[in-house]
Length: 227
Image (cartoon, rainbow, N blue to C red):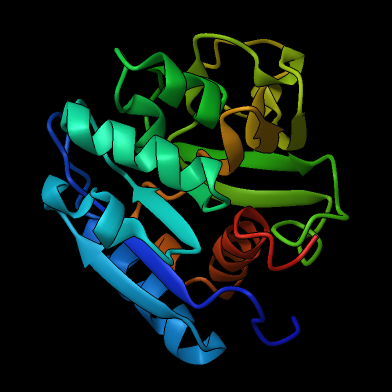
């Protein structure tokens, strides 16, 4: 992957108001290490007061890493919306889809909201779009162990959504979305530019080179650093 260009300043937010993933420290460490390797600054925070116009000014991307529940103040919501409208990218990882259920803008930004999941188990991710920087290094069938999230709606039907990968429900127990079950997508809409991956439940995901490259590609796409 070429060196980072536009991407220089990333905020990683990991506040939880509901379920908290044990993998959050590993995820923060992975993103910090990616920043060191690829030349961008990473600030990690769980403090909602970082969401002000002044604090977000100059940020190229905001990452919600396994957040859950209502994690922003009304003022923070407004500041994030303004910054994204000014060109800041957004990346959601795993339970970012379980966040801010009562904020319609966030639902539009992320593309779909979490509905439930079966037990953590092996499955096969089907790469649908291998031209995206988050997926172009992956095989067409990517064997993983994870929590295979179901969503309240299929993001494929929304304008501006580009589905990058789905999960084969025939390969695991408890899937609830049927033959078309998106797991990874990106979106350009009036809400802004966003990337979402449902993967990332377990700590060891964040030491896997393929998954780290997946995160880096999604982050750089969200920040309009690559296409």
